[in-house]
Amino acid sequence: MNIIPFQFNNSSIRVIDKAGEPWFVAKDIAEALEYPTAYKMTRIDELLN
Image 1 (cartoon, one colour):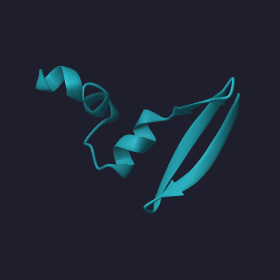
Image 2 (cartoon, helix red, strand yellow; image 1 turned 30 degrees about the vertical axis):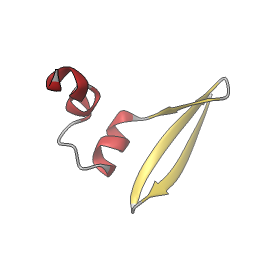
Image 3 (spheres, one colour; image 1 turned 180 degrees about the horizontal axis):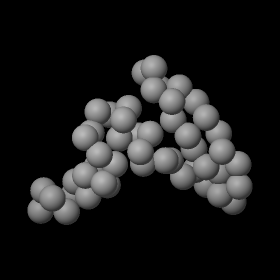
Image 4 (cartoon, helix red, strand yellow; image 1 turned 180 degrees about the vertical axis):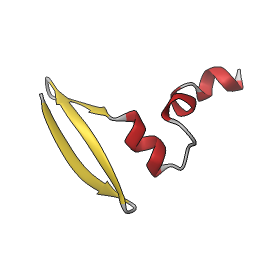
């Protein structure tokens, strides 16, 4: 398992390489997309339906 950091629109995004598959850190993605919390971002589908 490796952690690969990169930049997206001036935001730091961490990606974890698990067996060749990328796993994005939800907190980093939420901050980059300006969601108030990672929890709300990962539950947006449930909240809209």
